[in-house]
Image 1 (cartoon, rainbow, N blue to C red):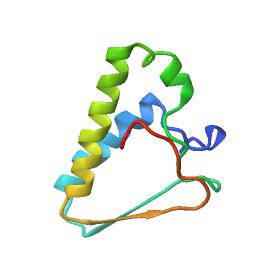
Image 2: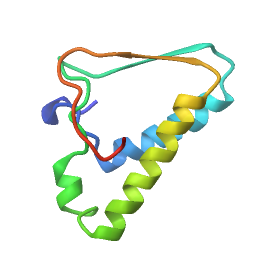
Image 3: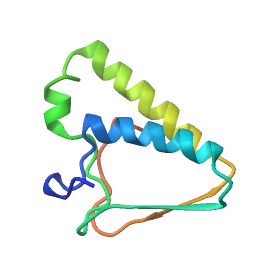
Length: 95
């Protein structure tokens, strides 16, 4: 959660997401619920990351590639995934 930034994805959160997807692929459960905190699901990438460490073109492309890869893996996982969306769910770069 990153409610101060409307749950924008920080670099740490992106790394945690990749770890969570890998863990879910090994998990024997059947359903996962994804939700944000304090009225916002996700506002996209944290602009402090985009303007800072990921501001260079190659780093930005790498971030997009990694996020697309792991989100596709989550989509293809043999579990039901449900997004509990309350408030805004906007942003780009990981589509």
